Length: 132
Image (tube, rainbow, N blue to C red; front, side, top):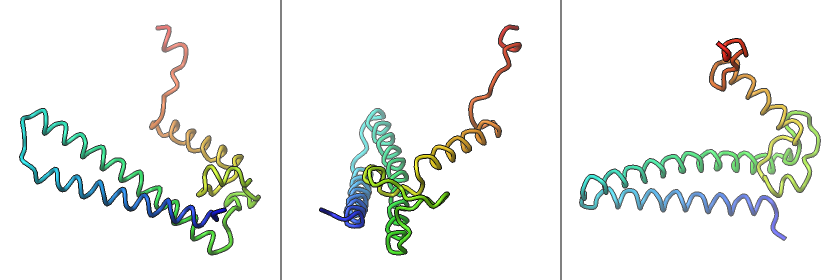
C-alpha cells in the first residue's frame, strides 16, 4: 500500500504537469491566428478559466507541500488546533487536512461569522424592513 507521503508526492507531480500543460497550450493558442470576434472571446474565457484553475491548483500545491513538511516533522495527522489525532479515514479523503472535523467546523463557523459581520457575506435584514 502506498504511504500518504508517496500519494501526496504523486498528486503534487500530477498538478505540476497539468499546470505546465495548460501553460504551454495557452501560449500556443495565443500565437495562432486570431479568428473572428466570437473565437477570440471564447479563447479569452478559456484563458481566464485556466488562470482560475491554476490559482486553485497552486493553493492545493501549497497545501500538499505543507502536509509533506508536517510528515517530515512528525506532526502530520495531529490537529493543529486541539492536538487530537485526526482519524485515518479523514486523512485518506483529505490527506492535507490540518484540523480534526470539530475544529474545522468551528473555524468555518467563525470565518462565516466574521465575513457576515464585515459585510462580505449575506446581510441579515430585520423583519420590519422586509414588511415595509
